[in-house]
Image 1: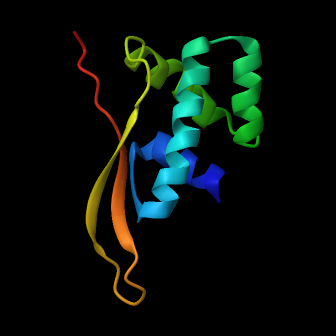
Image 2: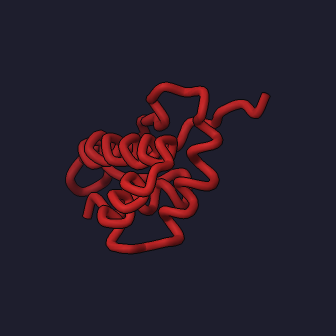
Length: 103
């Protein structure tokens, strides 16, 4: 489940989920972008293993997201709180990638 949510954050750059899931997924998203910034073959293989050999996600991490955050030392995501979900009152949030200025 965490790998799928991480894949969704990377591909869509924003997801809506519960606060607990968002806090867990944020760790994996940050780790994958850090692998992309490293750029080594070992990092690419670790990312491929995490995403079950999904080349499109790994390619986006290494070719699009890693250059975007080259000057940033962490904190690639933000959590924006929404309202409670009807039924179980779970706090809903938006987990999104931080937009880095292209200067």
